[in-house]
Length: 142
Image (cartoon, rainbow, N blue to C red; front, side, top):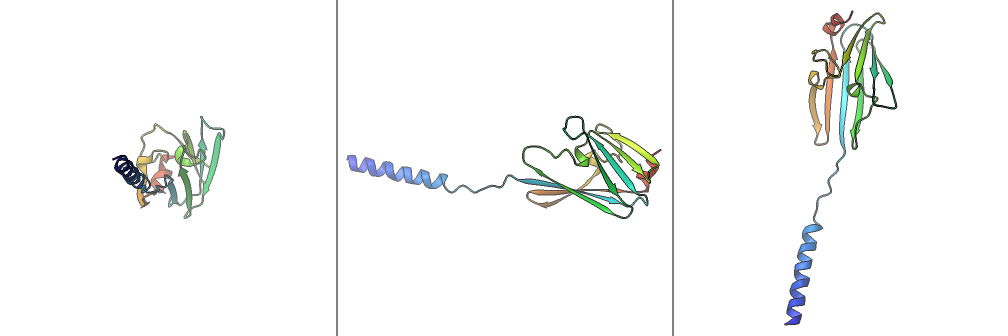
């Protein structure tokens, strides 16, 4: 009787062990990539400002007809030096006309408002967001 009980317990332990050891390894790494296409016929500087970061500013240049690509790995937070993560941005066209956007600005030309991007799922763990600068962006500047 004792042998049957021990055998039964070993059988149950073996079955439970097989259920827990069949876990699928899941890669929790997620990537976001950002594409900025300059179709505005003007050279663009994007100055980014971050209030809650060690890096207070960053600047990106996008020549007319060019494309800027940035990527961040989402694990424990965000990469502050990206345009999308700025608290405010100043967009300067050809060094003379500019416009400033803040994160709560609802303009359809605000490049730190994710709703103004076209998103495309690249894979299960990566999404691409793209923003195209057009003549209308330039016309918003002063």
